[in-house]
Length: 362
Ligand code: NAD
Ligand code: GLY
Image (cartoon, rainbow, N blue to C red):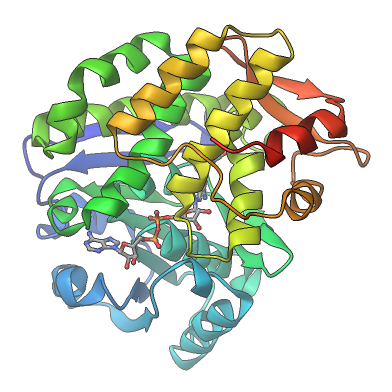
């Protein structure tokens, strides 16, 4: 195994699994081959990632009964139709209960392949090989899988933990700038929700991170994974604390749904959503305006949007928010904050106040 591999784990008893982060992990199968069981493997990837990295994975699988499936890229394809294509590929492979799916790509491929793994024969193994910053710091860890519906983001899905997360940081070299920046929205989220020290570290390391300094990036990814692994270990199925990971997401998911999947990237929508959550917190007297400003400044520094796109229908946003998975008994539940590093769950916020907030520009 490569020497500079950072190793973490998600501790879930018999379902615990490793997270390995490092440069060049995919090219050397000794970094991940031990995480596969059974002989049958389906590698699911997308049309942008496969030409760049599929060979590295396939080379390490010469002794497997192997099949590959390359899906179209992007959020618009995180659908039940794509899931059906994965089922068809599994059927073609005659995949049995000891088969493994490898998800090679960003969060879309990870969520889709994980969901198919959760459903096939009531659950088979899958391994996450994330290739975007967003997937490395967030979506590949924690076992949330699923697809979007026209009515709302991630409305159909399952909790299904991977067997391993193998994050090869070399793959980030080909990630388009806009996608890298979108990943930093989820990175900033970790500081905003529960780690003021990390938030401050991001303020001082923004330039290095944006320049893709490998050490800064690896530190950053490992820090986020450690924070998420801890939260998931304490609250796997989001009965409490895990909901905090959705800071900015009630607004963000509504924006993605209403603006059209793929129009705003997930991270961009989350960036705007975090700003609205901070603004609402200030309006409710929970936090100082200065904290909202500090968040907006950091997101702007990372090249992320902070305002709702002009012309977005506020009533449609509110309607989409009513379908958010955090809601209970028909009432909105939001993640707000008391300031940087101090997010909390808020119930019963007046819908009129939220509608007003959604109508504001800037
Ligand atoms: P994505 O999977 O669409 O990837 C972004 C784009 O980058 C795609 O076009 C992809 O083909 C391309 N790409 C990926 N890796 C590349 C590489 N190394 N080089 C060049 N191009 C590359 O998007 P994403 O931002 O990774 O993930 C967003 C999705 O993740 C959303 O659907 C969101 O809901 C989900 N998500 C899930 C969780 C979870 O806990 N399951 C958490 C956060 C986000
Ligand atoms: N990204 C939110 C979660 O995993 O809970």
